[in-house]
Length: 376
Image 1 (cartoon, rainbow, N blue to C red):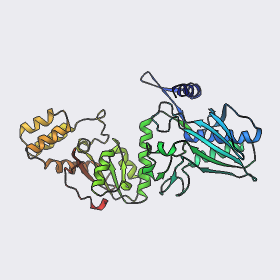
Image 2 (cartoon, rainbow, N blue to C red):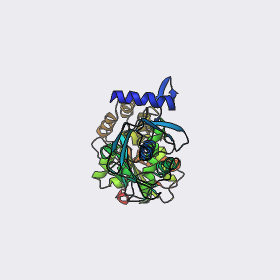
Image 3 (cartoon, helix red, strand yellow):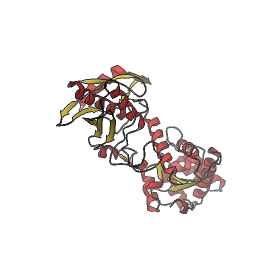
Image 4 (cartoon, rainbow, N blue to C red):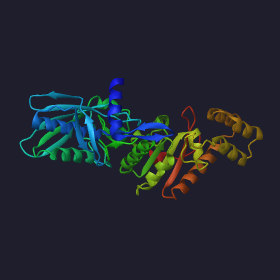
């Protein structure tokens, strides 16, 4: 696999170049849609002229001319199957090196029919660019496949796009959360993967919010899987939960674009949730880590003992802080922090909807009082 990765890296870097970030080379890649277009075109070309090509040239959905490596051909009685690899460059991508293939069969008319097969997901929820019940092959890749084939022939083809082990790969993506089951999506707006994993993550968050806002006017945000599991124990279904990671502010802005949302529950570990009380909407510790100061300030406003405030300021972990608060019987600070966090969130989104905060301890127990009945 290392040899394959090196070959793909050299081949695509020569065409796509790279981004220089802090004197580090960050390589671009190609989308699943680009690979699906290439194998479909290669299959149609083989049916037309009988040639097996080592690579095929396509124009990406973004308009760039690109050669895509073809891994192998398999001749069937009435069709040809063509395989190629997805290459993500240096982007963090669960589909990197996935083997994508197209089964291409000639039709008696000029129609080009595209569907998904093994390893390509099925859409089960509204809010995406694809109708419920259809294969998760986005409009841009479909258009690209048709355009590339019609550039050299007027023949019609039945094309089935498949992904080896796609159902397994999909478990590492956001697909199931967005209502795409049994496989990955064939996507790509420009056809090129820019190595910006944070932007890709934000895009996934936005899509998940868009889907779930079509089903309810109540949205639940969780920082991660642990928070989601704690919410599940309280009776809140994963179907209602969007994972926002550290990007609470971005998630709230995405929700603001959904006109129907009236209430949002932001839930998760105390260590992250408390930062919202200080108006910090990216909760990554590398961005801002003032939780000790925020907690200490609010304890001081409650006339907490100096020794408790000092211990909180000097604490190395959030678990220590919860222990100090408990041993001094100052648990009421959690409600104060939650209300301040709600106020900060309400101001952030200009009171477009009502925010509710739920903080969990390290045993998934609720630390503050909040009515979650409307989210169940």
